Length: 221
Image 1 (cartoon, rainbow, N blue to C red):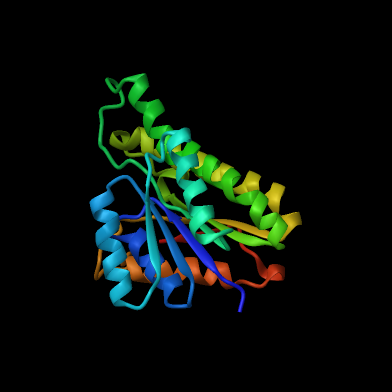
Image 2 (cartoon, rainbow, N blue to C red):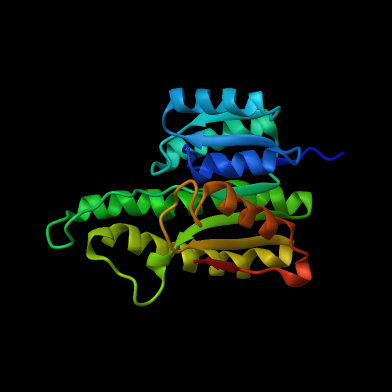
């Protein structure tokens, strides 16, 4: 059987870990990218207890050099990813009238530039392998009519992630690479409609779609 690898960039205890578990249950080896080494070690142990092979790679996803180095380690350890999931974002609240330009730029690097860097790091290998899947976590902030002012940088990021998805889909679909975004229109919380495990199933179903039925976006609300 061909070795299958799913890399999740932006793994936390909620959705990122749930996605890792969902793909891991299907026999995928998992690469996890996050900043905190201690958290990654805990996730490795949790997944190992579920008989899932998972490996953590520490990186600042808003720093191109740091993230590129992490992908070099991923390629050396796991090979070419079959699936890339980009799930990183900054969730801080702020006053849009006083927030600094530097803060907006730094949060944009995490929300969007890190996604672009990640796609660039896997696209060549996926093309050579004959295809792959790239899934981006979007948000309802990207949609018209939902613009709470305290989340201005995050909203800018989610609007941009949506456009990045559609643009990369145009670029990569001819190479049999499915690019899609899950636009999550609510607060992710266990035991609710936005339970991480429920959402992780949406990512899995997107990955499993036949090419003739590829969706570029699922709006989950």
